[in-house]
Image (cartoon, rainbow, N blue to C red; front, side):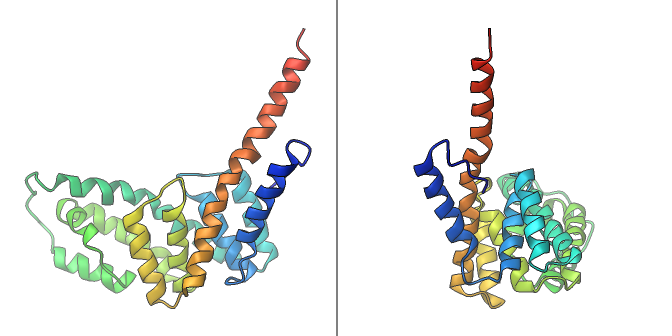
Length: 222
């Protein structure tokens, strides 16, 4: 957070404390905290460039590798699929197209690569198996590589699903369960929720400089 204590010292101090608690949670080493914060800022529902830059820098300074940061971006890039996972189930009363591929085989391949199956995928698979197979390939790329451990990958999914810019409860439930199954502790999940919650402060970070610029413009007007 970039503070400007001259604007409203009381609010600035309170916001700084909130951000500090989230950024210093003891459950994660600094590198993982930075990668989780990077995920929240890099999500397509937010794309907050100052935050992306700040947390890329922070991750690198705390020992993250190029591969770990790229893998974080790859994991976050799946967020667009929620248009399908939310939209397709609403088509359940419409006729199904004839299946020209083995749906069970695609489902089994998803479980093999990703380690789970959620019934929310059923309608997507039945109605658009070619699209779902392409998504499987796309989403599996970071899972075929070992830059980040599986638990951290799932915690990154938790971070982007719980963010105020998305709040995708069904996905959040799935990925909290997956993270716990892979060894994440309740305290680690709480740390992710705290980090994601802190992005509200960015309203102040972005809005106040604009206000000050506009006030200066008015003061300098004829």
